[in-house]
Length: 183
Image (cartoon, rainbow, N blue to C red; front, top):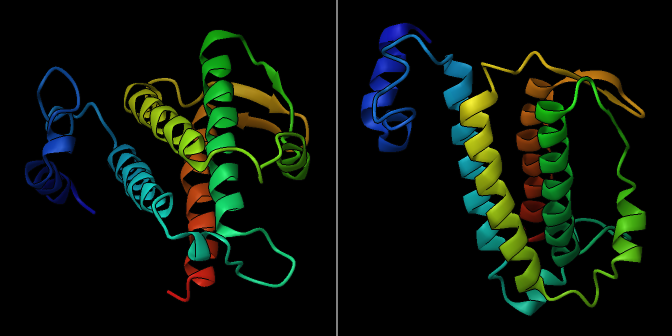
């Protein structure tokens, strides 16, 4: 997509238009189109995920395959994953080349007892933390995306990688929810 298309996207989308200091940063050459696309994807997946928290109990109990997590467990997991991603993002911005540990999703589901956690609590955490991630992505994706951290399993990664992973991880689980719901 060229610069003229990027300018059109900015003109068409009020959220993209008010990026920094009330101006379209694309027109000023301050922001890469990937940055705007990432923010749009973070917003899109946030909005679709939030709708999932309002599903009927019978839909929340559905699974996308035998023996797999229910929709409600996936939503709890997405909430917890957001907190992990957000913690990593802040560590990378604050500490030089930090080491971060892998998240054992099954241990979290068991240890935090997803079957008992109020879904609305997870919704509030998810929404709040996702909004903070969107803010930090807008400020730091291009400016500090090169900053590195060491993941305990994946090795050296960058801040940009972690922002991208936040969006792709969410979409991966949304596809499981859609499958469970037959959409």
